[in-house]
Length: 343
Ligand code: KG4
Ligand code: ZN
Image 1 (cartoon, rainbow, N blue to C red):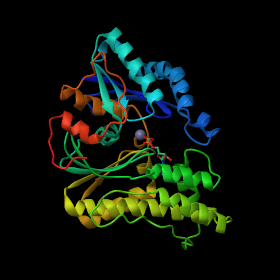
Image 2 (tube, protein in one colour):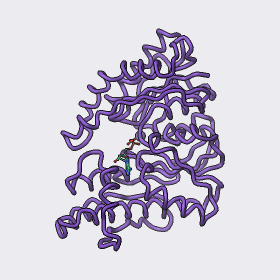
Image 3 (cartoon, rainbow, N blue to C red):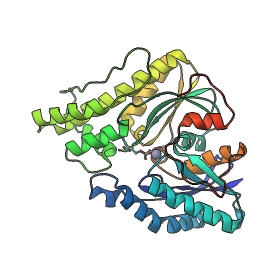
């Protein structure tokens, strides 16, 4: 089954062709990050305007790179939410229009579920698993029992981990997106760690995260030691990684499954990958993460997730549009999966 995926939930316009949810045929992306840089972050209206200009050329490129004709497509999968409403509207409207013209169904995909499926493009997903989704907009720990069977174990109560890195980068005078810039700068820090930034503790019961305090602490530190930018970047990166690994370890203590899947833009970070792998070796869990270029937003993961969603009979109706907010727990419920204590 050949699916065209389309992604437009934030500042990347992307299109990809994937066969049977596993075989990547082509993947193209145009980012508006360079335009957004002028504003120091993503401006929703600017993102929407860029998608309007990029979506058709990106889809044409993806089809051309795949050497495929629209008549060979079986479905169009598109990110339906969560994300920036104006940005989602462009992708969803475009997907519905071309699907109508090509006489194929549209599958509306959950953006975070799609991030998890970036892992399916390298090897089949093995269940039961834990998922750690770390992006610019979300930080979530997931119990992943099967396709469509997702349950949120913990999520951020304030800023997402990527947001903390983006804000910290801005304080250090680094451009948007801040995560890769922090990673690069941290690598130049002297070996002996000069600074530490606090990791929020929310109590023994919860698996939630909190990253907003990091912004204040980074601000204070950069005022105290303005010459120590590289060490501060490293301290920020270390604090984020520590918070993520700590909660993952606590989730694993409750649900000791065999497989852990990392997903989302921040999991492109080498220090995070290494720390989780090291933890996994110690705990006895197999840790998987997508190749770096599939960690950040892309359409291959949308097409992959769309395949499994299509198998569950979840297609988008004519009168349906973007869905934001949209909890991953609702994805599980729609798939007929019932768990107690959902939030
Ligand atoms: O998944 P993603 O592309 O978009 C969202 O769904 O939000 O994630 C973007 C986030 C940004 O906060 C960006 O700074 C961060 O991922 N990021 C990184 C790295 N590459 C991207 N953070 C740390 N290290 C990286 N190498
Ligand atoms: Zn994303």
